[in-house]
Image 1 (cartoon, helix red, strand yellow):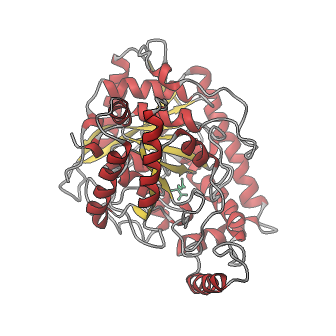
Image 2 (cartoon, rainbow, N blue to C red):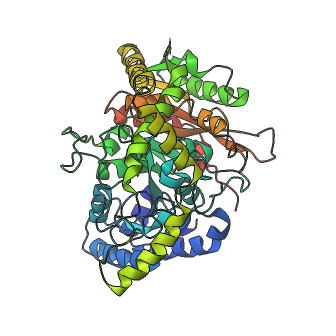
Image 3 (cartoon, rainbow, N blue to C red):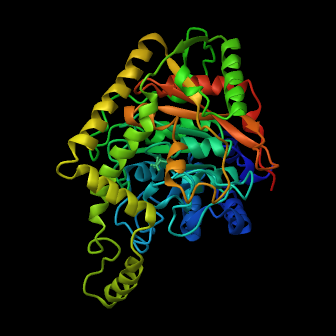
Length: 494
Ligand code: GLN
């Protein structure tokens, strides 16, 4: 097996046993990125020199027998997360030259663990989208079929992990942006509970649902990363002082006999592609055969989730994007020659302004918040949100977790929905409710389907939804399912 094809556990073991060094591991990724990224297009910025430097430091720490599962492990970061001294564009023209002066909390925590950052990956601009087609720069490609999208908005994270360009990636999930790309690329994607991982240092989209999220090749890999970055942060008052579970330890227990799994009827209706429905139903049967009890449940307000999300999100987006007025971000060194040059570059790039989707959301949100419309739209949406939250609360009286498909379709072709925002929004049909309720959910591979408009089989994902702060139960069931099936071992052909 090539070095860049390992998973985190294997890479960690190889480093410990000195089968290879962190520098060798990092270089194998860097050269693979060079070889493949002209067709996959995951990266906006590759931080080659910095990565090798970090790998050297990791090697020193390994020599000193330091232990962290992420020491020397190469990753990528969605370009919406602030990284000190490294360009952070949010895949937008407006922030084309923005170099943050501080690290997001999760970045500081990862640096402390000694992970190696290979660079910043593409996404829909400001994370608005489900395909990366809203990136102001370029569209990323799905390694399973280059004519298709890798999903979005964390599409560059997914394409990078699936194409073996890094071992894991940190993205964000505000309304599905890690779960859907994971499903489209045969990966594991975890959106934790709102407040489980600090949002400090994220470029905010919808502050009430934004969650830093993790995408990797296996359930344990995701669990390892979660353990390192979760928990209270004084800089984000929505994080709470609740113990971070020892997820890896918890995953060792493979007994799921006492667990009740809810199967919501509203998530298995006709909008769903028949073959995806069959694949997920088969996966649920498998989980039943492994010991869990399946309980039919109802989440009656499901059909309002997408419309509710697409009122609340633009409202928060219109307020969050107001700060990008071209004055404060994108240049720093005040008064110097350098500042003048930067200002010049910035003014030119700002000329291009926001992309269409950002403009659409700013206008919709400003409208929905304006006097006379606030009650009819924003307030109403918040009331429906309360009903959606209650649906889950009632369901979790009866079950320990809920399973649904992650997406209604497999990865679609580039260009298929980009001219029709409503079609694109409907791709979020199984994702929005969970985000509005702030619950944890993980997408795991559960099969392959040949789409009617293509020859290549495309991956299918299953979504496991948990109680608030109960990431451990969904990860456990996902892990048991993964171990008893072969889906995650399937890889796209080069
Ligand atoms: N598709 C959703 C949207 O466009 C999800 C975005 C996200 O999670 N960042 O809003």
